Length: 415
Ligand SMILES: Nc1ncnc2c1ncn2[C@@H]1O[C@H](COP(=O)(O)OP(=O)(O)OP(=O)(O)O)[C@@H](O)[C@H]1O
Ligand SMILES: [Mg+2]
Image 1: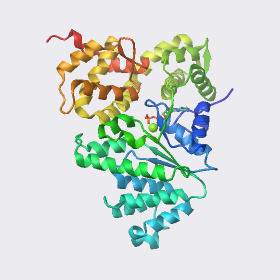
Image 2 (image 1 turned 45 degrees about the vertical axis):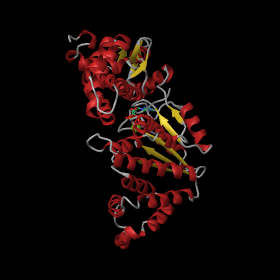
Image 3 (image 1 turned 90 degrees about the vertical axis):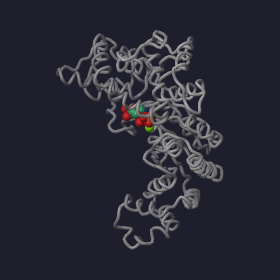
Image 4 (image 1 turned 30 degrees about the vertical axis):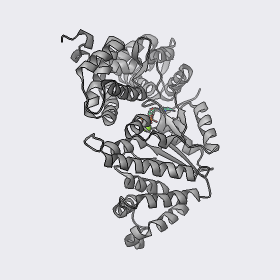
């Protein structure tokens, strides 16, 4: 039986990467065909891991560049991150230095003795809001001329576009919209020009669609077909649990593995991993490494809904606020509490909320549609028969646990 090491750090690759054989195969097929793609999935589904693992597997036939745009504030920052990703590829890097010669001239004599972060600071200092796109075009031309085809992963692109669009005060101005437009148009232009030489994959922990829609830029990505990553099926999730158990000396008795999978319901890889981690911790504490099916509920209640709750939800909530801004976020929190606590976010409840909230620049329905599209992307809710319901029992229970005491269902409120 196979063994698997637990995840450490944010993403997994190599001997920590489990399953997803079909996803890897299909994703690579599209890459070989020369397609650009948007990698779509709910939060914590393993998007970054799939990109990293693909880069590892295709390293011989492609020049793979992984760029994390999370910390970038503007297009020039993004160009610096792109340059930094090229740095390990010495032949290409030589050309990058040529393109930036006017900027790095002052440090050229000691360029071999300073590290890439320092070079990055110098490049950033020399880029202006007027010339980043020319330099960016040059970078893309260098990549397109590479011996091996280039596979460029742009992770957290939606975070960058969102930041460009809304700044720190969450207001969209025509100037900010223009900057987001410049960046997306630059990306589109290069993706079209170098189709076949460059394969670009974009992804992010927040959905790109709602943000592009807010910016009026939806058309800029229409040459990036979506590739969707789903939760693990039960067999894959149980296989992962067993491989972890084997590695750490745990024995599952009376189909405990199946009981765990059933309890998780929607098998988002990260949730499977943290469930196992809770079990391992409990086993280590009691120094007994057999784990029975009738212990699953206790771990779920005490651990998954206990210490894990706060940490995991913080992760989700922080993203929600980033996309929606503080005002819409207040209503989003209520809509989620309604779904978690009453079991469904019904049409009547949505109507009732519309009477309580007024947003500048949106009709009530538009505001709610905006929120729902983000909640769907983040993996909170899906449309059910009578309204929106939580996808994952675990996320619903987390949300319920956190908010139940502070929440009165909207239809029960006195007016
Ligand atoms: N293929 C996999 N094998 C094993 N564990 C995985 C796999 N994919 C994801 N995980 C687990 O999920 C965690 C999150 O993975 P990753 O960061 O790739 O997800 P993501 O979709 O990029 O998340 P986010 O939405 O926060 O950006 C990993 O740390 C790991 O615990
Ligand atoms: Mg990620």
